[in-house]
Image (cartoon, rainbow, N blue to C red):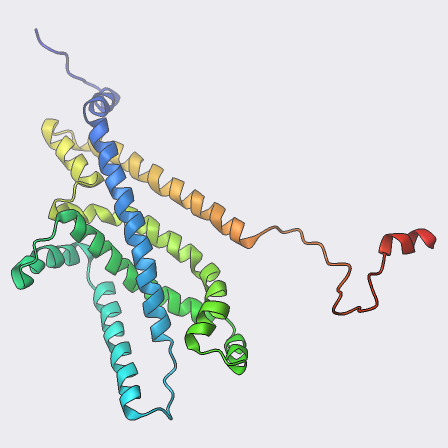
Amino acid sequence: MTTNMPVTFFEWVYFLLNQYGAMLVKGAMVTLLLALVGTFIGCIIGLLVGIVQTVPVNPRASRVTRCFYKTIQFILATYIEVFRGTPMIVQAMVVYYGSMSMFNIDMSAMFAGFLVVSINTGAYMAETVRGGIYSVDFGQTEAAKAIGMNHFQTMYNVVLPQAFRNIMPQIGNNLIINIKDTSVLNVISVTELYFASKTAAGVYYKYFEVFFITCVIYFILTFTVSRLLRWIERKMDGSNNYSLVEYDPMADPCGPFDIANKKGRN
């Protein structure tokens, strides 16, 4: 008894979804996990690197102190330029295979994937954080230093809360990019969405049908994430309607002024 195989495009799409839908969904979950964790860790790396990069070097400090800060900033600048200037697919190959070849470290493909996405995102986020810090009016930094705050206290209490809102769109952009760019990790056998799609397509040689499904899945992931991040941005902005405070006890120590009763008596 022979089984009738699909003929039309949509018949093949339906057939492949029945056969490999679970595998594609599992690959999509791996893709989303890599992107979320990698972006989160990358943001932490970028935040730390961005803050250190903006540490002012006091010209009156000792030569050793100035050399120390300059050396650290040079190393961080080198890290940023290397990981922004090379493709993630090459970084994955170097980290995964180079760790065994050079240091005899046998890391798993998933661990290598998390590491590559994190440090790659951190390089981009470092420049984003630096730009966000410089976007805050410098007068606020001077005011914080005038009341005795050091650089890190000024960053934590004054600058970063404002800079975070400015860089929020770029954080979302990096997350969306990572959802798509994790596909390059298939070269080190990470079983993400692209790897699962390539495996499914190779069975019946229906590459167009399988990758049409893959395209739809990627779009659903990125569209959902972008809408969610847009909602978070609106929540951070707050309401557009504001009401002024009618009474300020610091400005009027004699007591509140009842506007409603005053208007009624008039």
